[in-house]
Image 1 (cartoon, helix red, strand yellow):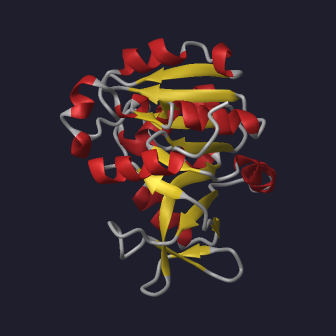
Image 2 (cartoon, rainbow, N blue to C red):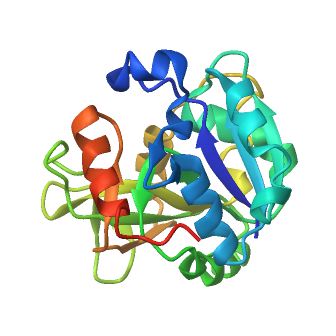
Image 3 (cartoon, rainbow, N blue to C red):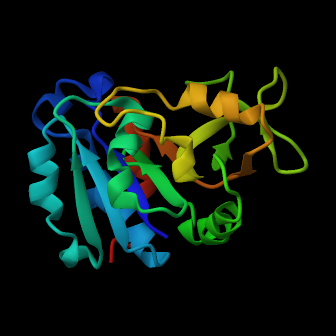
Length: 232
């Protein structure tokens, strides 16, 4: 299974830091946010990676290169203008292949075990149409309303009660994005909401450490959490 790391965002709420440093290269616990993601994906056996870049993308490419230093192979999807999540994935489809693939945000710090996604991809591969699997987390303080409901049968639905927050970690079939014209901007959330109504959106709950590094305060939390983790 291939994996994509979303690294094209500007990180507006972390300005002025992100005016000179791309958000994925912000250091947390001895390595950059994106290097944490690469290391955890590689540890799970996911070593064929696609990374999309836009804002200060050349800095990210220079830092990671072809990925060999980190034990992976990286293909770069360059966006002159950031295409949002679904648009970025659609533009990268030629690099991702025909099988289900994982997608993770570069700007989260977590201890999720990506090996859990491998059997998910196998299951989704048996489904001919659009399908997805989302990793959901308890609602953080900055997003108390949540996004989706995880039903006992593992299906993800839209509803008013017992909502969880989408973590930025998921597995998708290419069919979910094939109608997006390459280079067009498109958001992911409306597609997931529509998919939830078809019964082809499933998920799991993760209760481990997960921090969306979107503000200076949450960056401090990530650095504190990473301080006790071995970077080797």
